Structure formats: structure tokens, C-alpha cells
Length: 421
Image 1: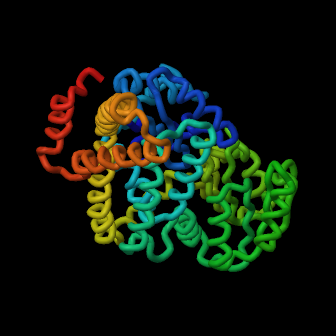
Image 2: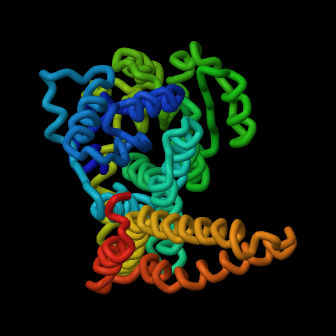
Image 3: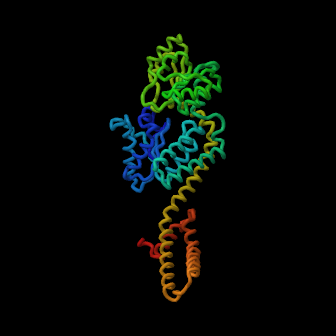
């Protein structure tokens, strides 16, 4: 099952309230799998989505528990109708949704590559917390393989397609030229780094980097040939920046409208462009009300993203067909898990008979048999059992959609008296 919300079902002011702090994600996953009805669980929390992926044997109880778990995030209460933004997927729809997410078909920017890395990070945290079992391990690894197939076998990821490239396109609409523009990066998030990289490729020459951990700011500044700034000092340097990119996991506003107003006065009202990629948001929304200040958050990139989608519709159609086949294959594997107890019971039944008859013979007519001969007899009877069971076990394991497949299991249970087990 999946319960969550994304950029198509919830605005940024709702998503940011449900967003999970990356530093505490492991503890959050442990809380998730401590719910009585949840057996395995992964939390996916990015700038565009918050989702819980889980397995359960008690569907309704688990759904209620996961919804309450999400709504317990800081800032959410019963007075806020956040629950109406949730979507829920069950069984096969979960597989299809996760495969589409991994392949970036469910992204704001179809074809962007960042989501796959974010999914891998989410899976790794859950695995380290001991929250991933057989089903989610297989599901996530298969989603990674599907994403690779989509990128290899279709043109969905061709060209420059990402939130960062769209942000740069918007910057070009504000400034006729990006040559010699100065960029201030607040935070060390991967998305922010990508925006800066795109800006520099498109002509922005000067970079200032600030981060709560100054050593990280120094490291990033060196990579981009920029200047590191102490975090508490960045408002003083704001007047020098033409473009300001915010990308932190800070749960509160870092840049107030009043600070921008002062910076514009010192700049003699030369335009400033702000890209807020933080979830929760880093910049005061009132900045957009200031003359010559242009603020865009993650949801504001949708218009350009829609243009991108139209260009890629044909490739997306190919990707959807590929995913359809992959979903069917995964569901066949999932169905095959139901046969495992029958296979185990069948082998145990035959092994009990083998052991019983072997002991009877060795204590009777074959009592004087030497140890080497006993071992040879044991090996021979094991081989006989394996050969007898090979065909029925193979039939049970076959991942086909033949209607009689379910009849095999029922027949074996009745023929060999496995119902009692």
C-alpha cells in the first residue's frame, strides 16, 4: 500500500507541513513500522512528494494508522483538511505507481533524473532501520531496474530536463542575459547545487555559498570556484546577488521580505530573482509583493514543466507500455509467494515419509548395513524425493497467468493431506 501526496494533489504549503526532516528519517521509519498493522515500510519525502510505502496483512487498520502517522507531522492538525490531498494505492496499483515514480513519469518534470537517487536514498534509510523485508526489497530494486530500462529504451530523459534547468529558463525570462550575474546559494541541497551548475553553464559568473556548516560552504564554493560566506553574514551580502537560490531542510523562513527590501534599496532597485526549492519553504512568500523582486517556489515551475511534458508525450507513451509489462511480471512474482508454504509443506510431508521408512528398514532388514552404505542409501532416497517433487514444484513456481495455476495448489493440498498444516 501507498498513502501520500504530491505536487498534483497538494500545494506546497500543505506538502511542506508533512515533509520529513532527512536527519530524523530513520527514527520516523522506525515509528512507522512500530504501528501494529505495518510489517515493512519506506518513507519517501522530497520537494514534490511525501509518501509512505508499506506492506500489511490488515488493510483497513494499516491505512488508518498510516494516515494518522502522516497527519501527526509537525504543523498538521485536525483543523487542517490535509487528508483530502492524500491518494491511496493498493496492491498492483502500488507497483505501477512506484515504477512510474522511479522512471520520473510522475515527476513535475517528466524525464528528470533526480527522483531515482531520492528513491534509492529513502530505501537505504529504511533498510538500515531494519524496516525492509522480502516484498519491499524486491519492489524497490525492481523499480530501480525499471527506471534504468525506461531511460535506456526510450528518449524520456533526452536533453536538459530537470527542475534545475526549468529554474534557469525562468531566470532567462527575468534577465535578458545571465552573463556576469552573481548567484547566492543558501544551503547545500543537491537541487540547489544543480541549479547553480546550470546557471554557471548559462553565463552566471560569480557565486557565493553559505551553509549552516561553514566547512560545507567552503567545500561547495571550491567546487564552483565561488566564495564561502558565514551563514549569519549572508543578509549583508544579499545586495550583491542577482539570483538567490534556497535549498535547505530548515523548518522555518530564512529570508524575510524586509531583508529583501533593504537589499533592493542598496542595489538601487536592480531586479533580483529568488528560487525557493526548500520544503518547507525557505523564503518569505511576501517577497513576491516587492517591486523588482521575483520569487518562484517549487510549484511555480509547473507551467514550464507542462511545456516539457508536451514535448515528451510520445516517449512517455513508450515508457508506460514498458512499465505495464514490468508490473505484470512483478505481480506474478508476488503471487508466487503464496505458493511457498504449500511447497514447504509438501517437501516436509515427503521428508517425513522418507525418514520414517528409512529408519524402519535400517532397524529391520537392513540393520547390519555399514555407515558408508547407509549414507549412500540416504543420498539415493533424497534424490528420489527431489525427482518426484521437481515437476509439481516447478508448476507451482511458474509465473504464468494460466487459469489452472490456482487449481494445482488446491489439488496438491487435498491429494497429500496438506490442509491440516
